[in-house]
Amino acid sequence: MTHQRTGEHALQAVQDPPIVAWPEEGVRRIPYAVYSSPAVFEQEQKSIFSGPIWHFLGLEAQLPEPGCYVMAQMGRTPIVVVRNPEGEVNAFVNRCSHKGTPLVFTPSGKLKRFMCIYHNWCFNLDGNLTSAAFERGIQGKGGMASSFKKEDNGLQKVRVHTLHGLIFGTLSDDTPPFEDYVGHELIANIARVCGRPLRVLGQYSQRLPSNWKLYIENVKDPYHASILHAFNGVMKQDRLTMEGGIVKGTHGWSHISYSKMKTDTGDDTYKADSLRAASITEFGFGLRDTSITDVWDDFGDSVSMTIQTVFPNFVLQQLRNSLAVRTIVPIGTHASELRWTAFGFVDDDEQKLQGRLKQANMMGPAGFIAMEDGMIGGLVQQGIAGSLDKAAVIEMGGHGIDPIPGSRLSEGSVRGFWTGYRALMGF
Image (cartoon, rainbow, N blue to C red; front, top):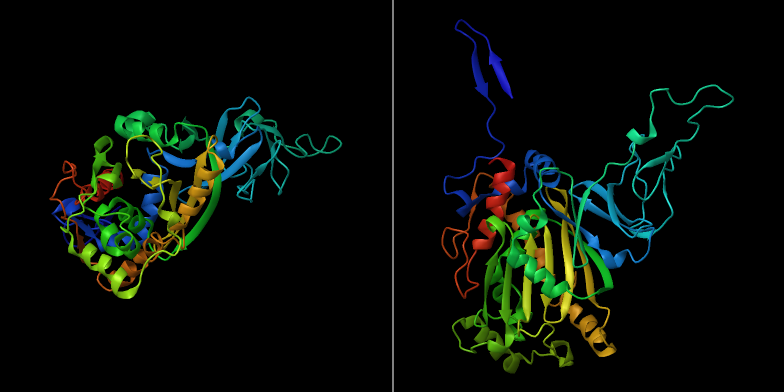
């Protein structure tokens, strides 16, 4: 916006200051204001969540029959995903085109049509308006204007892409094809983890007292796992001595972090692991039932952990044999909702099914590992509250976004996220 000031001299244009003054170091410094500014939050809804990005909407396994639907979110925009009578997956903004009333209210269900509770406008499973109450009036009086056409008043449709049972959508016509948006190496991992018919095992969610970006940063930061999560160190579930690395997607915005448990060198390069291992003897820490750590090689490649993100807020998880998808939904500057869907495969036998369910206790709101992830963002939000003119230092692994071959000791994927974020936000 440009303001004009009048005076004795000629009119002079004065530009509003930018929403955030980004440090000159670029993505090596993240201004604390981006986690707390209402103006930033509002701009994200337009530039990112309604912008040229693909957003995870759900699993096809959640839509087993025509008429089955699930609710999803694109930022603050409510979405409904449904399977039509021909078996195709459609998605629409969950909003009646008459007055804006939501059409469905429960997280999932089955229906033959969408009907608005306010004025009974009805839409088929392709989002087309099929009827409007009293469209022709009563006894020849009233009714919709002659210019009204049902074909012009359907639901706002979402572009949909399905891949190996995952459903993604976008509100923008400018979003590139999904394969180009994500990159072939990340597509390959989706095929690896989700390449067999999926079976939903459970869903849960938790409200986080922090900005959504603090959670996605945490997911893209692979080296905190050996520090923040005591369970990992004590039970040797994730150590930086394990063979592993980071793979980046298109432009570095998305990533995969992976490790192979069976190739742990077992050395004491990271001393904190030794201290925690010693605590088992000193304090008696350990698992009474060690079967939770029993694993099998799901994909025949000895990779025991992959955490994959798709910009901006989707996570595909393989933690041993615990498989899940996650989405972090922004609620406000200081609040977000983390949604989990655990899954297995249709051809899992009973032993594998029970193993996945047992290992799922490592994740989720009270998981042995994930519990700390749910609280650390809130602590950061508290810590930065009085210093929004300061910035975080993101220099582990250097200044760039390229992975370090054979290492996870880097914040390159965090810098990659902020590279995409800045590009879309215009910072």
